[in-house]
Amino acid sequence: MPVRTLRSAVTVAAILWQASLAAHDLERTSVVLTFESDGSFVLDVANDPNWLKLRLESFPGPFADRIVMWVDGREVRPASVEFMPGAPAVHRMRGRMPREARTLRWYYGLVGDPYPLTVRRADNKVIVEEVQGDAWSREIDLSGQFHAALVSPRVVSFALALVMVVPIALRAAYGLRRRAQRSTEGTEGHRGAERHRGTEGHRGTEGRG
Image 1: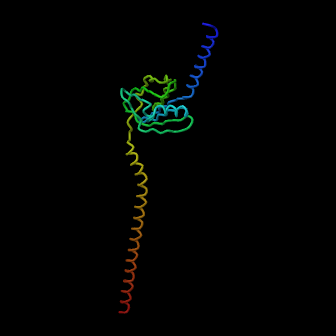
Image 2: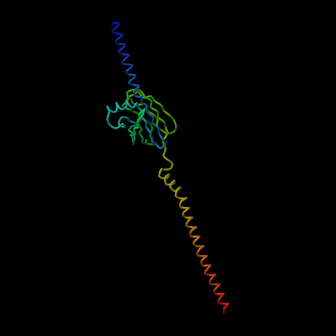
Image 3: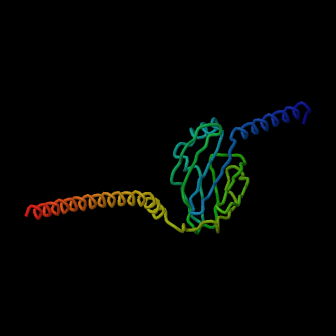
């Protein structure tokens, strides 16, 4: 191959390589999945806003359809999706895992470049994996971190309401008792005065006799 042709080929390859790197830098993808002990989770998928806008124009439809959480042989879908604009732009998804969940495989279909996936378990363990772009993650251990709540939220709400109501009820009862006591004292005083006047009148009658 002539030297000039070889140099041209190398130059073209270098330009394509640099363009590829620049395109990769535009994605700026990161994923953070955070669990609570009751199985609830918050999933943040962050991307460069300009890159994300262009990608979503090419792939219309709900963002939740662009990701997959494959748990123990079936898909777990988020219950809600919230978009938070900014730099980076973040899609925040919330949902709940089965308490008996053991393994997770993750997939994000919009990207083409490696990106970090951070899983924050409910037992404070942190798992970080580099996902190879448009590919599935390795199996991620979810076992042993989810537990049934000792007290249901309904019971907690009832207990809090009871704590607030009881002092009010006690103050009301005390006020009623005080009013009843004052009413009784007033009645007794009135009766005493009547008896006193009756006695004085009787004594006056006896004196005149």
